[in-house]
Image (cartoon, one colour):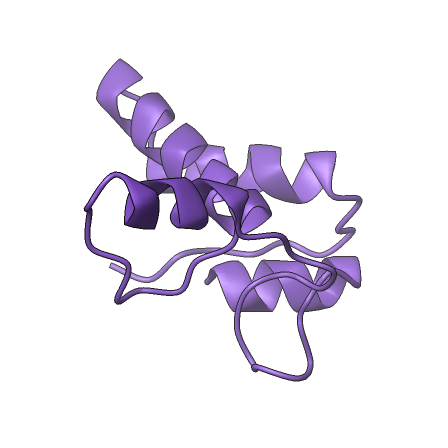
Length: 84
């Protein structure tokens, strides 16, 4: 779902096929330095998407509401609906 939204917003990383373009990996590098797992190569901007979605889910927002909010913030004019 994130890749669909990133693509519609013109933010997708076309080289990897996932994540966002012009991504940095400072958070992941710090996790590596601290001895944490770095097997999943998620960039800083993509990590922010995951963290904010998790926060909103814990607040009780539905995935559809969150997705709509993200799409609005990224300038996506299409309706994107998550599947159950």
